[in-house]
Length: 215
Image 1 (cartoon, rainbow, N blue to C red):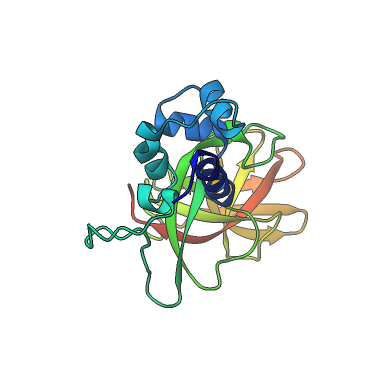
Image 2 (cartoon, one colour):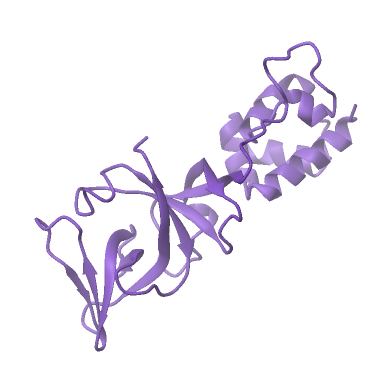
């Protein structure tokens, strides 16, 4: 069984693996950032009575955090085993994108979601966007959660997340390169394409690699 300092070390390892900031963790456990920072700096004793909340916030169990086996409750295992070939990852859900900032900058992150991937999990930085609107239907429905792999360009006919002319929210469109322009094409023919050019600049921020049903 882990002592208080070892519990903090383990929680810190989970936090870094899941790319959860101190601010985000504090929000999840409904505590101030300064208080949570004191725990992780080991300047204040970790409150054992709040263990359940920290474990839940990092998608595990109190038994796992404490380093003990849960032999009394066989229906609630500390480790969930997914089918062979699948892996579960926590990825950031991006809301508004601060212009010029890294996509996964703390101020851009709305929260975190769990996604299941076929192994090997795609390399690079992964994040998620919530589709807003009907321009990509029927391929991607309104409010679907779309997983994006961050990259500056995509091939023709691939779906990309694109930030247009300093908009704070990315749009999802199918890409086609034409001369010195990039056409952003909706799958829904009731919507007009968007043209990226010198007069209407934008940037591709990533490629759509999967989407999940609307939350």
